[in-house]
Image 1 (spheres, rainbow, N blue to C red):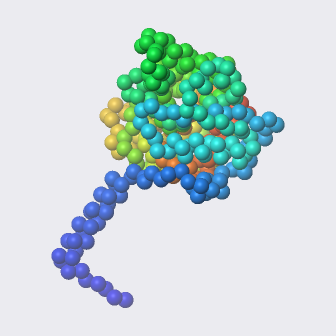
Image 2: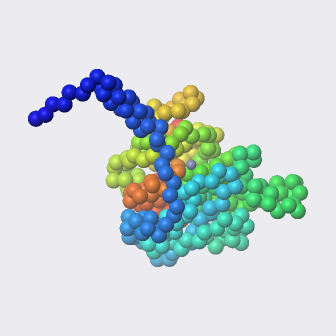
Image 3: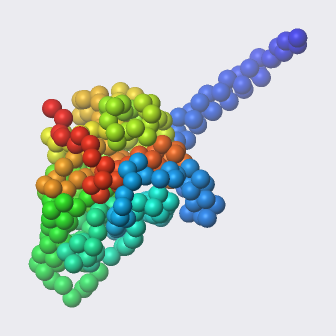
Length: 314
Ligand SMILES: [Zn+2]
């Protein structure tokens, strides 16, 4: 056995290196974005469930809406591709994709069983993606634009209220962030997020069918810890996943409750809503359990996976 005695100046250097590398671990939580590639999709394909939890006699039609007018999530194409892959591989869904707000007219919406809102961050001033997109049409007066934007939002609310499904992923919740009606439909408005960090995601009820993908265990990943406000505090939903606020860095003092929900389901009229904050990063989709969870979520919003979606007690 050889004992190495480190000379004093060397020891100092080692200590400094240790401090620096610890500091690096603490700050280097932002994952490196990567472009969507065939190789990555092949990897996701190998991890995705072969079949859906509930067998369907007829494929459900789903529209993935991926327009953003504000903050651009690098993971938008990845998320769109993951949903398309999950639907295709399982054989349970026929997935269409769009960036066009005219998809929110009733004639278009009625072709689908469910809509997926994929990271549709709108501009911070109005937080209304319809208003933003209509601003590109310069012949519309401000009054007309507002009226049209209101109607398009109402069409989406009506679609869900009349039995349609709505899956909202990560930044999709900010799409109409100043609309009380939209916030009540999706279960809250986006408040803010501290910087990306490792989040210990926990299951609210291990026995709930919609978290069966996780086999009773939470998971860990690097993500933006999303905090919500407005309708969130009515907890008019059945929560599925949570994080603990006291484990997070950089949160505001206003955070009182330690348990903060980051995924839930809820009824809205005759329709169903599924929200999942995971994830800001495409790396998270490399967890096969998360892929199963999203496929199960799609089956829930489409009306095939029947489970307890009653609101929990406050
Ligand atoms: Zn994000």
